[in-house]
Image (cartoon, rainbow, N blue to C red; front, side):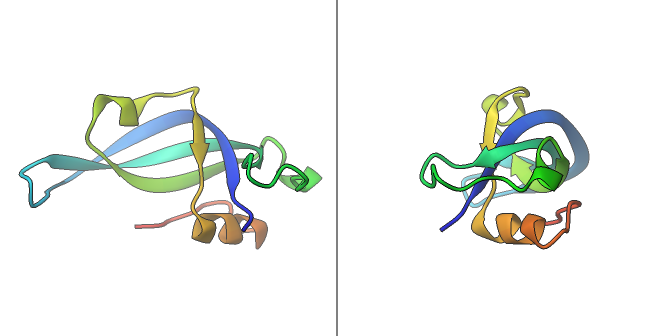
Length: 94
């Protein structure tokens, strides 16, 4: 399975919040991820030239302080990867 990865360049908090069954508050955020290649599990896969360095928007729920770190590696889901490869750079997964 091919999975893209990149570097989190920016995170915008959207202000939408929810509380889970453990009474933990989560906030919806937009992650701006700069694509750098495929995950280490597929070392022979090459990112198409037209996607190198592109920024994709991914919507995720965050709660812990380490969720909000920038300039760290982030791995996209299989669904997000397929959408990027189809040309949908503004990802909205919920």
